[in-house]
Length: 145
Image (cartoon, rainbow, N blue to C red; front, side, top):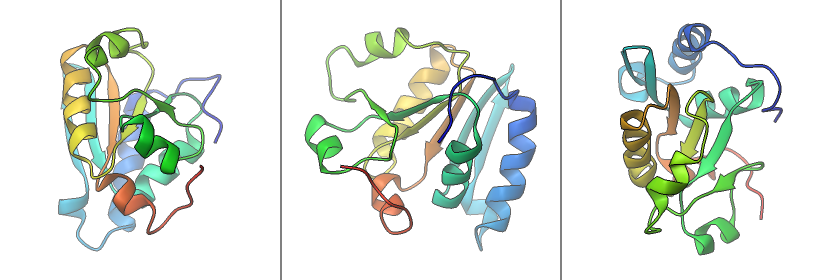
């Protein structure tokens, strides 16, 4: 995963994401939810689309919002971690660059979905949430311990 250097304009990612997510899922209407308003992209993606995004992105932050214990049990290679349940979770998010795409996940997709909405309200421009979280990921992709 090479997530450094250049940035990918979100205008280019969304059409590519739609094509990738639709071809990877038998029920495309249930697999991708795109919300784009005022230049903000907030996308829920399935495992295949999420894996493709983090493998091909030239920049971004892969963010695990699970607890320290959950993270230690296994995580996606290259992920940074901020525990959603920390009292200073919002303050930690505020330290991140809102112009850099964020690829966020948790155990089931609930906390990361809440985190994605929070980031959107904080001015983050592009956030991708892994549908089903690690529970879905481990059935299809490797994890790092």
